[in-house]
Amino acid sequence: MSKQKAKKHIFTSESVTEGHPDKICDQISDAILDELIKQDPSSHAGIETLATTGLVVVAGEVRTKGYADIAAIVRNTIKEIGYDDHSMGFHWQDCGVIVALDEQSPDISQGVDRGKGKFKEQGAGDQGLMFGYAANETPELMPLPIALAHKITYRLSQLRKNKTLPYLRPDGKSEVAVEYLNGKPKRIDTVVVAISHNEEVAEKKVERDVINKVIRPVCKRYLDKKTRIFVNATGRFVKCGPPADAGLTGRKIIVDTYGGHGSHGGGAFSGKDPSKVDRSASYMARYVAKNIVAAGIASRCEVQLAYVIGVAEPISVLVDAKGTAKIDEYKIVELIRKHFPLTPAGIIKHLKLLRPIYKKTAAYGHFGRNDKDFTWERTDKAAVLKREAGI
Image: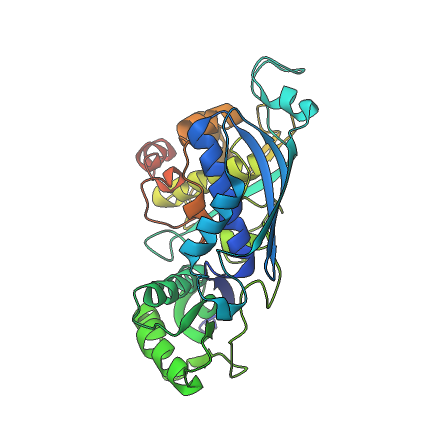
């Protein structure tokens, strides 16, 4: 018999820094949400932000007993990100702030409030489908390309803020292309970094510093002589942030999740309180998928949950283990329904989502983070799943 030929493919994921225009907006929306939840945990919000040259617009729907100084939150968030130099064309002190927030529709309220509407149990805040994913490629059980891409952008911001690379500006991107052999990551084929900088620094210095102080420390295990590296491939990146490209909340949903691995239901996260299953059910789906992989039931796992507005229980639960499951997938679904609360109220209680924890989720990914507040990253169900799966 002839040997089976090894199967190779390259998968690429990207990340963006906290100073990317869309990420500025995500952080502003979640900073406002945090303030409302801090004062009134029962707050309901759907907050959208737009940022462009010299202007931030905050719009959406809110129902709360709390009060938030929207303009102050906007400015503080922009300041923390690092837009504190007037030469960038966007500055926390003097950008305009327009607020257009309205009250949440009472037709939605009756569906998400316990004891109101057609059903007495708290229902989903919207209809839709949500996905969670996990893979045993990294200690965080995340796909390797997005894990490395996030680590690159996070390190860029760290070195900017601690003045190791003081000429950097807040706006940037990374892209990592990983070569897989028979479904397992083997090496990095290409690394791409675009990072903004001031007028004075030489382009070659930016390239050299980013390669030696960012890319190599993060990616060294997977780099080889054939790896291609591109830093600021156009040569210059001085004009940055909202003056270079308008930003919007919810426009980086693949960066926020799994970098293109698995499926996506289309719903964004930032600015939405956890009654919105776009957010809370996506967190639960990640929690479920991660525990299944941690239990050794599958090496890759995608979980889909689907909901109807105003109805508590999901209309469907689906598991796709990508051919890696050690037991039948319908049995995995049975285990999920037995061991994980899947109603909005159950999810919110189990994952402790009525806390002001959301601003820090809004940059460098909602998943794969080692942070005690990211309760959906726990693997506390893995032991019982492993035992009941009989593996």
